[in-house]
Image (cartoon, rainbow, N blue to C red; front, side):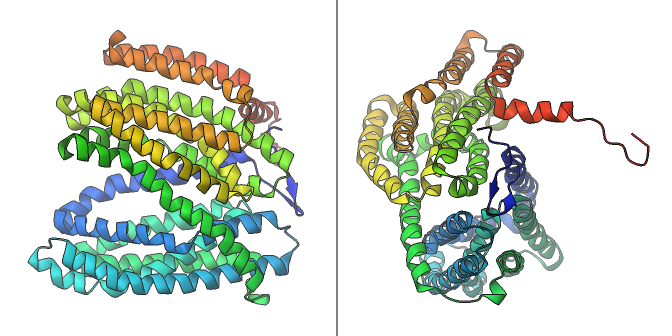
Length: 501
């Protein structure tokens, strides 16, 4: 099955996966670009102390997000599986999820009100002048949590019908306004978190309201508003496992830096954290594809879902491999410009190793999405529990005996083991996985070039361009999912409008 072809489901024609993927990649990149512009302005206008405190506020909101219990993802999965014409049932799914998330958000908001205040005022060393500002923030911070939960439900409902353009316009627009309007207010009214956080909360509230209204209108909630206990149990059953997986995943991902700090000392963490933060940015590509695939894999037949999964793995393995290959070649020159030669000498070899793990992890994210879409989050949690203790032991041993480089190697090995378990559970055959050997060998060639075969920037670019051209040709030859849409557009005759070409 060629992934980009539209498929009919429930009376509607689905859009091209390639088009949806492009929209999702662009929407993931825009907030990064906005932050590159706004972060220096925030630091200049409100200072490092206030900006650090603001970062902790957003971090707290992220941590308390587990109280959503995976209901946003559960609703998206349930709505994607239901036929479009099942109006009453779809409306009850959305209404039930909204009411559950509103209740959970309010409970979480109360916990965050007291717990967040305790963390901000008792555990942090605050400058004296910031204490009154923090005291004024507690209610606003607590109110943000239910808004985030409701917004997540609305986005999931829009994405269940593959309305990614609408969902992304609202999300990215809200994120942009949430960055720019507080900045303008600080410029006009003065540096205070009592200005920044309330305006950010109002923007998020407006974004959540718009998202919910669009989703409610789409699913006719206002004419079929009802709470369904049976659907609530089903949603909580699925979402609970998703939430547990979401708690285990950061634990597995953060153990490497904890081990480095405990064994090698906190000063060595920077040599790992700097390249890891950079390398992880490239995962927006895999995340965008997973977001695109989820509703399609949820609604497709078993045979269609398995075929789509195999095609997506092959396409992502080759295309994202090209990104990682370029990253390996250019990481050292970029780090030398960004953080200086001393840090680059420490961080570049680490980052080159981490790129292998990130590539493997992104490819495996397709199979992870398949398991979630096919209603198997419980199996995913079991796999995470199986690998947790062995991974901790491996990170300890590799960091103890080989230092930060050993931790980077352990990370890539962990990604490989994780991918093997997930892809086996998703019924990916060995011969399908073997087709990724080509990109893996090219990544290895890139690492060899970077380690000193051709250390100069011009040589790196020349070698990278030559290998990249060959790689593009192989992708064009081996991936009809990418070739066919392009060829169809080239073969399409020009449009004639009012006799003018």
